[in-house]
Length: 133
Image 1 (cartoon, rainbow, N blue to C red):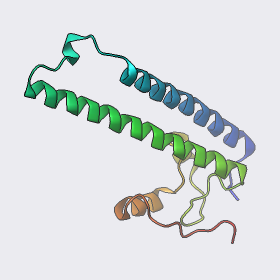
Image 2 (image 1 turned 90 degrees about the vertical axis):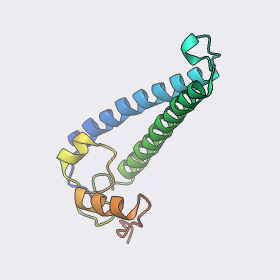
Image 3 (image 1 turned 60 degrees about the horizontal axis):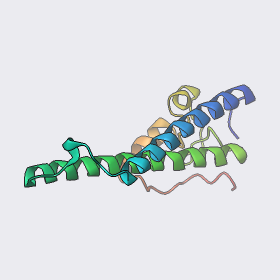
Image 4 (image 1 turned 60 degrees about the vertical axis):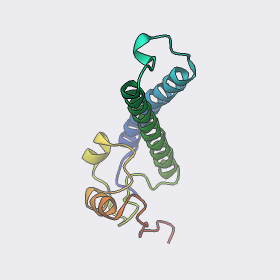
């Protein structure tokens, strides 16, 4: 169980809501841009150099969209932890995540030390802490 009080959780929930709305808007706009035919001269491909540059731009747009979708998944997971009373508790070690960390990154699932370990191992590091145990 987290040491967060209901006021803190509600404030963090509003932050998650705002970020989710922003990300959904960005994803929708990106999808609309992908569907719209380009009439802009800067998007018309005329030679191999321009093809390469256009491909890089498309790769960046794709990576940005994937990053946004991934962050939306993290927000959804944070909401699930809220619903189950585990929000603000590190999924690896079971210690409370400091409020200052959650203020900066409300979807955080790990305390900073465990996040560093997970990043070194790769983002799919197993969760050692089982709040249901």
